[in-house]
Image 1 (tube, rainbow, N blue to C red):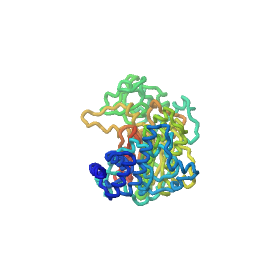
Image 2 (cartoon, helix red, strand yellow):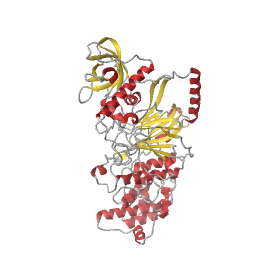
Image 3 (spheres, rainbow, N blue to C red):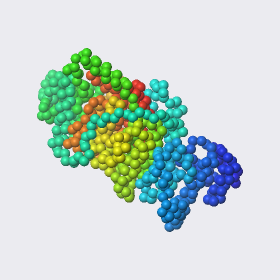
Image 4 (tube, helix red, strand yellow):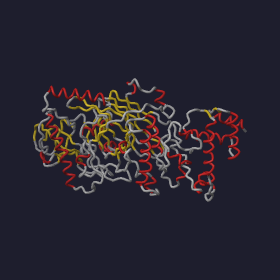
Length: 618
């Protein structure tokens, strides 16, 4: 039978390191567990995939771990056939004797050699540091290491789905490495320097009151948005003074207002209204005629400027529509002084505007369990790539998860978040050292957090040595890392704008990039959520939204997680100093159904031209 075993291994593409010794052990496994040669090799293939072994060679050092895997598989099989039968293991005996058999697991392990420990659990697919904490929300903690999940058996791990600017970099990976960016090519790099992090806004604050907004708050919020844009148009010097859009006149006028629909449902060209400001038109609405425009892109809640005329007083015929708010010039600063300031700023920025980061958005576990395997794999990847910053955006405890929806989870949501998310991040931070930094943003889909938007940051308690490495931001958040301005929002505004936007593209031109156009709306409106009325299921509290939803300045990087296709795009805006670039990123979802999703690895280097980014499948 040993020759049959050898033939089965060879037919599957495996080579035997020590034929005689390995075949003797495999033969004993077949006899003890009543396995055929083909069954044995099939179990080995599963063990090979779960352990993420890189060489197609069966070595003697693997045999003890393979034996542990077979034992657990047989125990699980017997338990299914005989539910009332209990098989006692050495762990049970030691537990009954009062001995702690996990004392050695409290030491943080090295990801590079963790898998080759003899007798280690068979289904540990991650290489992140381990502790003696429970790593699953399963009802039976003993089932953690004997479950073979679809996610654990996936193929094409850590493969690049899209590359941004890699062809322009001398330090880029080779095409072979990029196509096969799995565990076998993830190599350890030199430790990085700690990034300089500055949070620009922490509103709303944790513990704030919400669900107390009034109709007056909503009215004031919208009126202030319209007036802010009107003042910006006037201050730019490019446009005249806004007037009343409902005033009948044959001459062209400038009107500033918000796009509305004349009824329920989606807007179309015949149902668009323009709501003016309180100052100029008393908040009245007028119908907007777009027939003369060769191109437009509009959605409800968008604040625009309209150049046109209203011959009857009931319909404003637009000849030009614009929504970009230009930055006002520095009129108070002399030209010579302004030039010196700009040169100093350019010099300091060019020396420090370099950053490496990983960006991922939830869910962080698959829909068939609460093992949080994708998060574990992501931290394993981060422990080898060693980015300066890891940005994790919710949902973490997804309220749409089947087990949470059904109410079959036997632990509190806060406990799951603390054990499955925070403790994993603490282990990662301790292992990586003080140079590593993690940023957390909540989502309105987080079952353990406040259901309101804008959303306060997580209120978590960390030890003093870990607190500088893990930062919680509100949703949306705006911060700077190494003088690189980064804005992020976990509400799927791109998908919601996609369902509400109407546009006209000239017939003689190629269809524009719709994703880039939707993302540009966010920057042009200077708001993380310019859509009004809000989409169904988005609990906007207008009493908290005045400053929290505002984008204070043009970000260098804008992160907008969405269910739409992931992308990395360079957006161009016209500012007071010419074109302004912004790198917009949709990292996708880290987990999709029972399988893996995507995340983004970004190396920002001063400007978009020197920046590299890749969308990677987990």
